[in-house]
Amino acid sequence: MTRGPETVVKVVPLPEEWRGRFVSLIDVLLRVRSEHARGRPLGVFFGGMETTQAVAAFETGYRACCRYHGVEDPWYEAFTCWLFKRELSTEGWHTRYLAEGGGDHLMAIQRYLDTVAEFAAQNPAPPPAPAEG
Image (tube, rainbow, N blue to C red; front, side):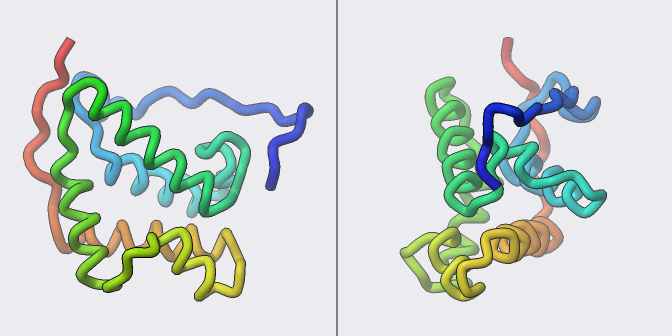
């Protein structure tokens, strides 16, 4: 799905449990997975686009924002190490899963979100640190 001029994006408030604390990218991806399972289109979360590149760009932006503000995301960093060891691939999930899925972006994204959920189930989040500010 590409974003056209007629696309309307609904702003959804932050979940209450996210207020006042740092939110790991893992938390965000789990929320996206949950909302998608409830029927919300993936494009709502990724600028109207449902491509692996859009999800990867979202992740890059989220991580850049964290770094800019001097915030570490140890749960996501642990996930990237876990994923690398599991897949033994340097090409990135977005390239590999898309190729293995025959070019089906939604299938590749769903596989990635399922992989995030598998990691989270096996590796609970570290205790949340209070948000600064």
